[in-house]
Image 1: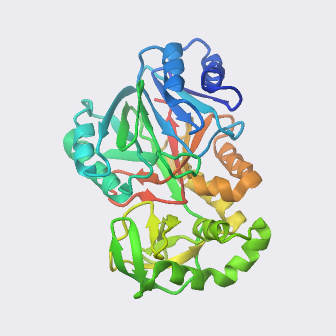
Image 2: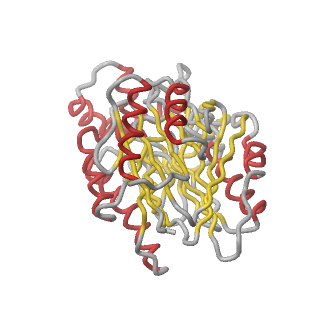
Amino acid sequence: MAAKFVTGLASAGDSVAASENALGEAMGKLGGSAPGLVLVHSSSNCDYRKVLETVRAGVGAIPLIGCSTAGHFTENRVGNGGVAIGLLSSDSMGFTTAIAQGVRSDPEDVIRKLALGIPTVEPGRHLTAVLFADGLSGAGEELTLSASRLFERYSGYPVTLIGGFAGDDLNFRETRVFHGLQDSSDAAAVCFITSERPFHSGVKHGHTPLSKPHTVTLAKGNRVYEVDGRPTWEVWSRETGYAMEHLKSRYRVNSPEDQAKLVLGNFELGLCTDGDEYKIRFPMSVNPDGSLVFACSIPEGSVFRIMDGSNTDAQIEASMLAARAAFTDAESSGQTDFAGMLVFECGIRLALLEDSFTMAIDSYRKILPGKPVLGWETYGEIRMPPGSYSGFHNTTTVVALIPES
């Protein structure tokens, strides 16, 4: 039997009602098939324990994994709070999940613990790891690099790594990952999927360079104190001042606090990579001393440009290009049939695109007409094909196609 993927989303009602309605919508689409995996995404406004207990009561003791988000969506609509659920049914795929604590203090040790749960991979089959982690850990780069390296070492097979870092509706207070009935901060959870055909993925951001190259001259972990020997916020304010005049009128912000959020959300750090490519790093907050706190560590000596992500059309196009890249990659290997699509989007993109975000969902529907889509807003996106060792992103779209077997 070909794999079947279905989705459900509910925004209205309390935690129990929203969970029941989202699950009921998804189960109704399965047509009597038994789910083998449930993905749960919840707003931070919900009681996570009640969400998980409600979903568990409805699906039984199958693998359950997910996280809190900064928003979520399906092929039909965008959620405003509430719960989104994906159910995957297949008699040819295997699902194994694990969770481990301590991402902030020792991300590599967390990955080693998760790797102990890797299932045996039979010859000719493929291994995919869907990773969820604390979105405020500041350990995005370290965690994903360790996962890409150690999952392959422990399994003895190439591993496709996808996933995202949990959100909390842009409150930046606490994020949680889900595993069974457990919801935990400072943790990472993973679902290892074995399949006959591989998961294909694509990635794209919609940012362009705004500034000249700069160098990080003082940093510790994910906190950047100085750029070119000057306070970081001073440099950011100077370089983005002209572009900000347009945005202030567009979004009608006046207070210094709101202006700072607008700067950080639209003008992010782009690490210079090969050629004209950049990896985006999201500055989450400004400290009184002028330092910026990023979603992951930024090493001293890093050369970067401040990027402009305020072009709505470019951000929407990035969604289309990421989905198209995933499909083209699959098509080149002769794979054209899919059960559905998983999308990992940065929470800032939903906040900035506002009503235009539905155009991004249209992009996904055009790539896989009639197929389900489960997407959620992250604090960091993960995409590492086998053999890749650089795949942690911010304010970027990652699209993964679920094979039919």
